[in-house]
Length: 148
Image (tube, rainbow, N blue to C red):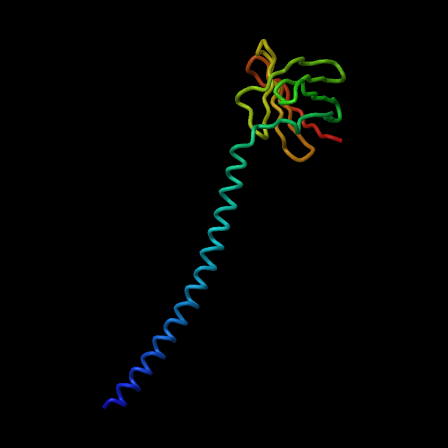
């Protein structure tokens, strides 16, 4: 009888050892998946945070923009890109145009002090923009421009 108990004890120890090994292996696989999931979530949160904290920088607008019939140039008046000089056919269209509060990263709205002319520059591609000129609340012109 004592021999049988020793065999049962040895067998149960080996079973417990096997269960522990399979549990550790299973847990290790879950840890990999959990760690991978946490890394992906962390990266997404970091990108969202960076996107949220970045100012609406309109530096992309700087330079000369052309279409077949007209050319515009945008020159920043300060380092913060909040004041602009806009030239059309090398003549000043707006001097000291201010970036409006309703601007976004892709659509920069600039207005003069009298607020009767607005320039809506919408980035449509890396070197393309759509310029909408609004006079007294009415859309006056829509021009497709590209940068060379």
